[in-house]
Every structure is written in structure tokens, then in C-alpha cells.
Length: 238
Image (tube, rainbow, N blue to C red; front, side):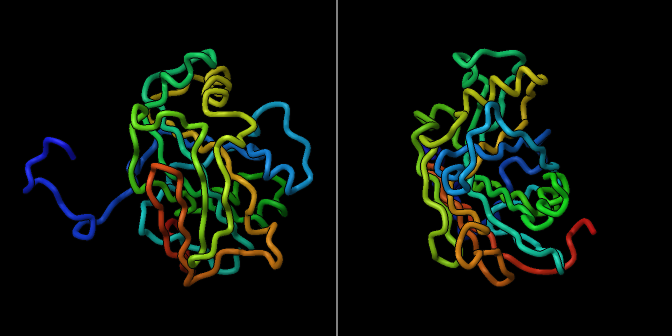
């Protein structure tokens, strides 16, 4: 905001925020990437990143509703740090990987857990419309001194259900950029959702599935708070 004329500044209450990148090129998700979450599940650490893809149409902005299709079953939240690629990255080493990241933001990887379990894969359960809240803004790479020391937390209706740190990542942002760039070239506008700490809905007793009428809030240190109401109804793309 430095250097802006006063009449160019608007209070946040007077505007509606959209997702900071409403039509990303691609969204790469990483599963089982936090040591505390693996310990919580009694899982051995994977030898390499566990990759899935979310469709760009899943993106929704801060304050916009996450829509649970009627009868979908148990749906979880997943608080995550997202990294946005700014320059093409192909076969980059870990030592140069962060040079290709332009910005960071909060991400909520909404997931239909019971559908994923029934299907035996991530595809359908990760890809309902509105299942990727993203925002409320992006912080440029120079504003995030170290993406590997950030607190990550999530609340539902004010109750803290996840509280972790990116220190606990099994594969950090640099690892992920390097790994993905060896599989295929990363391009500007690609998003990497880097995984979630312990405390997803199924691991609470009783399970803390998302319910219509609730509000879910993701916070990543220095990147703001991403709040979204939960409603039920036909999916926007149905």
C-alpha cells in the first residue's frame, strides 16, 4: 500500500474478493506430506511425493461458499500452504527450485473422504466445484522469508481442528518444485498445494465432517485468513 494515493485505497469491507488466481493453469496436490499427519494415521513416510490433481474449476475465493452436494457423505477440510509458479521450471535442482515460485497463499483442499475411500483414488472426491478455496490474497516470494517455518492452522466455527507448521513437511516446497519439474515442465500459473498437517476430519472422535451452516477458516502465518461458509445444494457445475 506504500506510495498509493489515499483515494486509491479501499477498505476491505467495501469490496468482494475473488480468488487471487481464479483460473490457474493446473493445481497439483500432495498427499501424506506432514510427519505429524503420518504419525496420526500410523503410516510409514512415502519414499516420494504422493501426487494428485485438482481441476481449475474447483477454485473459489475467500468468503465464497463451499457447496456440499446432497448425499455426498463425509467431507473434510485440509489447511495448506500453496505455492504459485512464476517462471517455467523443467528439471530444476532443489537449490534453484524456489527461484521459480512467484507467490504463496492459503489453500483449503476440501475432500470428499468417504467417496475417495470408496473409489480407491483421489480423482472424484477432490474435484467437486468449489472444493479448492484459495486466498484471500497472494504474498510475493520476497515477502515470505522462509516458506518452511510457517504456522498452519484451521478452525471450524471457531474450534481449532488443525495446528501445525510447514517445518513438519516431509517434502518441502523446494523438493516439490524440483520433483514435479522432473515429471513435466511447470508453467507460470501452476499451483502446488503442499499438503496438510494432522487433524483432518476423519481423525477426530467423533469425525468432524464439514456440515452446512458452518464456517471454515484456514490461516497460514503471514498469508491472512481464508474463510468460507459451507452450504448444501447442487454443485455449481451440476
